[in-house]
Image 1 (cartoon, helix red, strand yellow):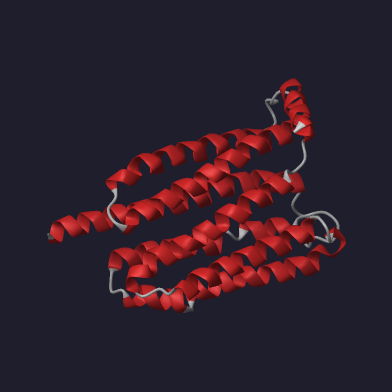
Image 2 (cartoon, rainbow, N blue to C red):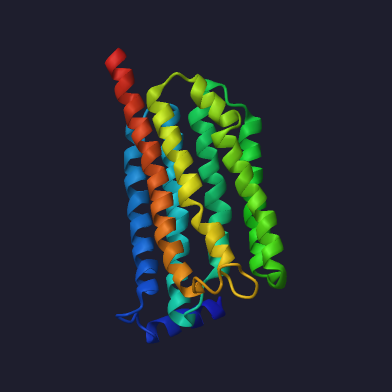
Length: 250
């Protein structure tokens, strides 16, 4: 606690500089995800049935991220280095919750609890091994990065080719299928910034000579906001569309 208070005091002394674009994105990321949480929490009571839970989780995801960005912005101002530990604490909570969203929207079409645990397992595997490669076993980061990628590939397989994809296709619901495909693209394209960032870390990162670690913080911050808020907005849009569809057929 005393260590963190010292960081805050240092952050106050080292005020945000006008050319600190990475610092800007820490502040913007915090405010954007906090605002998104307020929106999701306020809209949740208007949803019906299972969609309340889905929109609630969307708000929890962005709120957890906002809380971590509050700490990360102070850490950045005090140290001007990447807040790796804070990032992984954030991701180990929010990424599995994003995987839970796939299960929730497919539950009505036959998704089993096994799919939920499988997606959570893949996400935790990806993050724990990734953290070990960035910290404890930094000298062997390429090997641990490859091990971490297996979890990412597992998630991609489930949503693009595996049981989750088959359940979505069997739903015969064009609204759900469109939302599902959008979420899949978020995982494929949006989440791809994280393994790219991993390859840019110092020592033996494959892209360490191409992308500066400092620039990766800029990309991470923007990517986090787009991925988490965008993910939640897709869920919200699906909930609203399903609600309107119910009223139209009533």
